[in-house]
Image 1 (cartoon, rainbow, N blue to C red):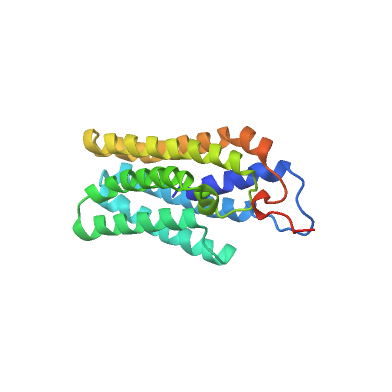
Image 2 (image 1 turned 60 degrees about the vertical axis):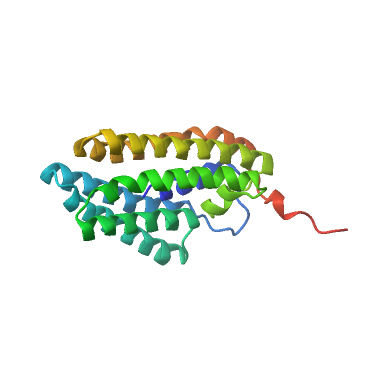
Length: 215
């Protein structure tokens, strides 16, 4: 659910760079989808703390994820890989929770998702790919060394979220888990904003990976 804030924040970081003429701005659509996700998170918190029932609160996550995917298709006519991946995880694990009436699946979703993202970024970068750029699917352009640094930072961040989620799942109460879902939003937003100086320093107008036409 936080994918749209990561994508939107990183795209808006490039607003300080002079935009190419006639190039459409994408920040507004990212923030629209982010608002949908934030609304689902608020709904989850309201339902849970009103009922103290994770099963009932799971409906807000499932419905919010479905709406976020639909808004992405309607507004942007496409789905960036990261919002799609996180939305699918939320729908699958949330759906399993509702079908089995076992909240273990809802609690495990973050552990599997964030560890998979972190390892995927590290392994992909090690193999010579640029996985973070592909995941974001946005208009952010940087030189490859800068992408590698940002990828490593996000990989460690995702792995940290995964470990923290697993600790909350194993040792925390339902109340702590519900608070953790809200805390993840704040932590993720702060982390993404903290990358702004680095991104603004290394952002360029043209994609350096595309190379130049031979003379």
